[in-house]
Amino acid sequence: MFKKSTLLVALTMLLVLAANTIVFTSSPQPPPGRTGAPGENTCAASGCHSSNPVTATSFISFDTAPTGSLANGYTPGTTYNLFVNVNQLPSNGASQKFGFQTTVLDGSNNQAGSFSLSNPNLTTLATSFNREYVGHNIASTTNAWTFRWTAPAVGTGDVTFYVIANVANGDGSTTGDRVYTQSFTFSEAAVNPCNNFNAFTSTPGNATSFCTGQSLDITAGSSGGPGAPTYLWSTGATSQTLSVNAAGTYTVTVTEASCTATSSITITSVAAGVADFSVNVNNNEVTINNNSTGVDGNYTWDFGNGESFADNSAAFTYTYDSTGAYTIALSYNDVCGIAQSFDVLVTIDTVPVVGINETNLANVLSVYPNPFGNQASINISGHNGATYQFVLVDITGKAVRNLQGVAGTPLSINREGLQSGMYFYSVTLDGETAQGKILID
Image (tube, rainbow, N blue to C red; front, side, top):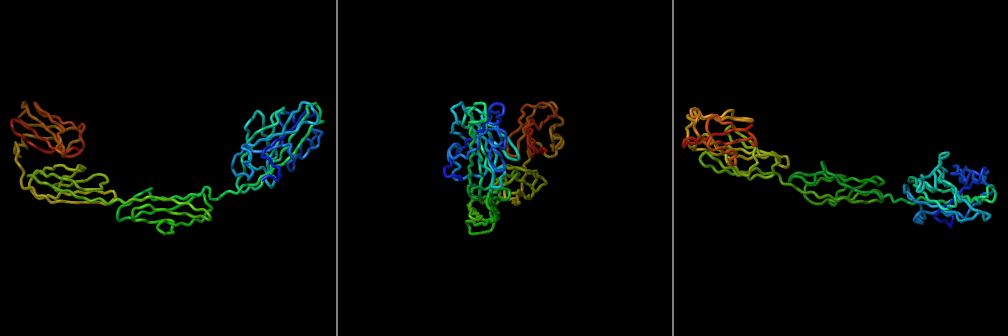
């Protein structure tokens, strides 16, 4: 607040300099340290002007734009637009020139806050003895100036603007000029310590769900408050960390002195996976229907005959080469990181004989290499000029190669476009069909 009851929040000041011996209002800019602040002279006392300085009560207007924004005190760290106006004429009717200078000090007479220019054509900055000054740039008929002031940090207390204004009559002498001084004091506005106070919640890895049967820790925190927080959760708990094992929305109220803030987080639960599948056996073919849930990655199948592979299909068919009892086992890690497994015992009683018998297959038809990486060859011994059909299907029964009217062997099979895994082939020659398996690495 202003010390003076008539305080305007408008600042006007002037500095005069006439020709030759005059160094203030007619100069390009005023020399620093002439505001009459503690420890400083004025332009009158330094011999620039013969007039004794007059403590003004209404000749200098000092305020903010918008007007009155400092009336209830300054807010630390806030930048204000200030303006100064001189509303007095020189002692004679000659052509007048106006000038001003101001500085702002705290209760220990140290610089308070900082200045910046809004119109460098009319104002200038200067520094002297660790004090910053704003003054006119060139003395002229202009009697109003604007500039910016950034308020100091919290705890500075009252600050005082010391303003000097000069009205020169421009007659080339030091007589007839008028020098005015005035000070304006503002208090530091009370800052609400809770303005920047807020609460928040966090979980390990920012998780918002947990697996059924497990729990999740929610930790409360705060920032911008006076310190020494206490916590109250919607469950009634008062610890900083709350361990929950049920889905729901959890709210925490954090209190620091007179400051309170709340934060909420919604947690869901996820059921652990369940491994399950059914089988249908038809001769040596087993159709598998996968009913498992909650996989995190791939299902891995083991067929109990030394063969295994990963397959995420909902259903597929596997063909055994020989009779016997086999355990088909499924294993995977679920979304909760738990290893799940399930197995079914199947019995293969019949393996149909197709086309060429096992002995003839071994002697007539060969696939190499098997398994293969990029390419495999199909060879039919003794039938170099024969025409035959070659079909390659994946484990879902989808044909991925279908070559009709192939003449001559060996036949090259390229891996291009095929994923790793088990495939089944058939070769039809002279009305007979031979079948087998190929594994692609």
